[in-house]
Length: 324
Ligand SMILES: N[C@@H](CCC(=O)N[C@@H](CS)C(=O)NCC(=O)O)C(=O)O
Image 1 (cartoon, rainbow, N blue to C red):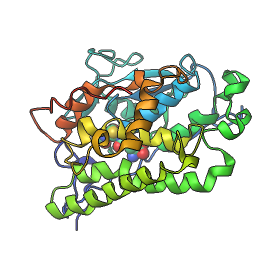
Image 2: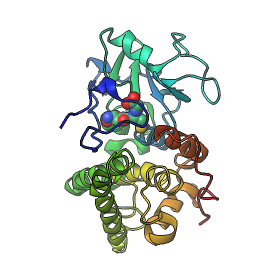
Image 3: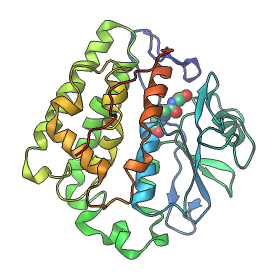
Image 4: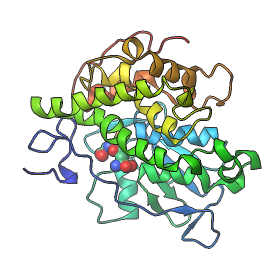
């Protein structure tokens, strides 16, 4: 079996030669820290998050940035196009070039930081404007930095250390959240990609059934009052943040473009559907638009069709999301 080199990827051909998609690991893994004399100390307006709004891994960080009120502390730069070189600037919904360096592609930023770079140029990227380098391209670790390391810039009641049980990562739930994160990552978050990018029938089915078994399991878990209204009870945790960005794309993109089509969230998963709409519609106005305003349904429909090299994107389902 040959595993693809990072540089061999192109839309429509993401799988290894056994038909299975294996996501390359994010290789740049430094950390912004609240500790002032660390290599990358937390500072206001020093770090920039590069995203494409279709990317679910970047989406989680955008959500937490708004939930925590860090919009004026961490700048966001949007790449709004993809071509054969990778993520690019088009000027349609984001800037027409990199605001600092005038680059046309995210790849140029990787090359500025690492002139020998020959890996994938993936989003999200956390850029350090002082050292002019990439701090991290590991979405999960950037998310955890944003949970806590910039807390000195926000009001006390929003800080991870003072939120007690309402933390994104409450200490009392550590084991459960770690287990859920790994289970959801392999079967659901990355699971949809393993299904969507499989290039043999066997590889497709090998990931398709575990994906729906995992969704069934989470649906079952939500029946338990200790898992309501959010996945681990009365407060939003890391688990909700990580699952939301996948399930909000599910009916509009993964179902059709990725052939994750045994069931739809809206018709066959009533509890997950309610959970999803509660976060999105936010009837009690608790989230400051963190979920709804960071969602781009039309972009998902177009971008996932592009990733699977379809010249046509699925028009439905309409509406993109049902009311509460
Ligand atoms: N392994 C990355 C995942 C990020 C990722 O795969 N991003 C996708 C978009 S959803 C990407 O940029 N793919 C384009 C590419 O690899 O060229 C991480 O853990 O942060």
